[in-house]
Length: 294
Ligand code: UDP
Ligand code: MG
Image (cartoon, rainbow, N blue to C red; front, side, top):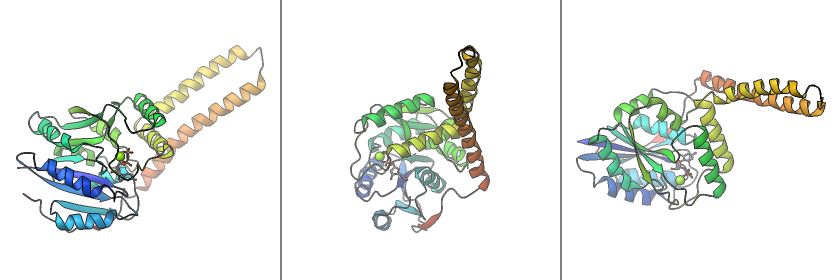
């Protein structure tokens, strides 16, 4: 008998949790020869998420929850969930039903019968998202050389989960970690749907910060770009030497220097945060421990 652990990061999801629980349970029960557990990670919600999780864990023995002492972010919530998961198959899902539960079955099939280590959902459109966000997301995936539409919705083998848990960095960027650990991944395309209730926790500013986090945590491309730009400008400056447009030079190189310094500063600050060795999350409360239900 295999066990599927479903990890659900929740930040102010009172509107959707009941529906999520119902839909996902219905789907999980149709998968043959498996049992399951639902692990909710309450990432410092300020609405009634905690009450709902409390009652879910009381009425349904498949459900457990871990509540953070404050909002630590989805990355931390996913890490906490992975650490708690007992299953030999582990899947991460958003609480808002934007990750279709009907994919759970083909995902389990890909790992158990087709022997993939991982089966990931891949959004093929971005219906329900603003044009600007759509464009920026698209460009981001291009820059970082990642499958466009690849999200955190994926089912993984125990072996892959253990490899991910070995990555203990403080500045976590799960999409980067997935590709760092490797393993064979099967992609299943799905259409984006709007969340069933509540609102997205992301705005343009937080998405931008998230994208920078991804780039700085997982590549040294910005440093290389800076070096390239610096070198080219240096050489190009000789061409302008006889014409002397002084102000332009001052501004251009001033800006360039700040840009390069900021890239270096960004890496330095990452080192600083890592060296503090702080915990990635702090659990304030958790549901009673239970055996996995058959
Ligand atoms: N989430 C979280 N902590 C946060 C922000 C989001 O645990 O600080 C959870 C949220 O509850 C949801 C998932 O991460 O289950 C995805 O969030 P959201 O739907 O807001 O993102 P989007 O689908 O708009 O990318
Ligand atoms: Mg969502």
